[in-house]
View 1 (tube, one colour):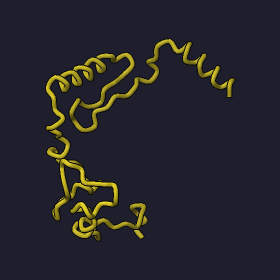
View 2: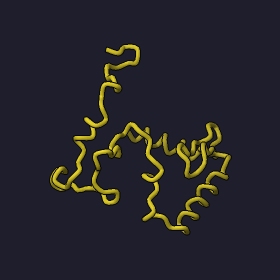
View 3: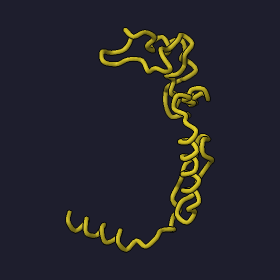
Length: 126
């Protein structure tokens, strides 16, 4: 038991190859009604794509078949425009980077009279 780290799982005792041997590598390995995602295709012996404990590689997150310059520019423009509303939202990180997200600014709300009235009405109906 590893009480100092909060559980009894010892990751160093698990070989990656033993985990990978159970991953589907052929169409027959999938349950009925399921098939391989294409792209990227079937797993190889050295594949670690199903390992949820590792960060994704750049080539795994880039989906060239979805890229369209006009759409990409419009999406980035929308993010920039939304970011400009600093009165109620704060952007953390940069677009297209890991951990880019928005959070609301606490205490920076517009007139909440109608929202409070709706909440009171909902509470009285219950």
